[in-house]
Length: 175
Image 1: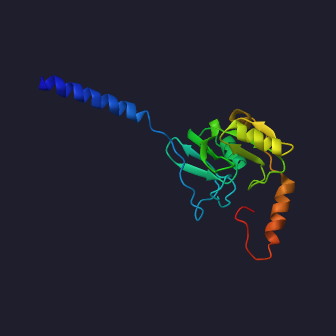
Image 2: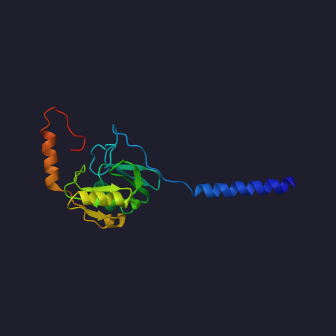
């Protein structure tokens, strides 16, 4: 009887171990503003609604200061195995899986590297933002994969001029 009970418990333990191994949820890591720099443009990554990250299959986390920078990296590193991509909700900065987000492109919305794309955890929030901001285009994660990522060069020039004209001597961490 003891042998059967031991065998049964051992089998249950093995089954639980196998189930647990396949249940490892990939989670984003915290942004360290003092040390984190964008993998693409090497600018400081601020812990805000524009920060994104990729977790590679080997567990390495890479952070980006703009959704456009993340997609530049993805296109340049198509052979890398990714476990997950994370973006931030534009309204509350909550981390969300990139594949689950709804995106909005608007040429006048400011993002760190002027790609002008922001992310939302739900479609209703994205639609509300798009309605309030003329010229917006709703996009899905699938749309972003084929999107022609281009920086808004006019906005970049304005941001650089603003950086250099700060009267208090402080510079923006993004521009």
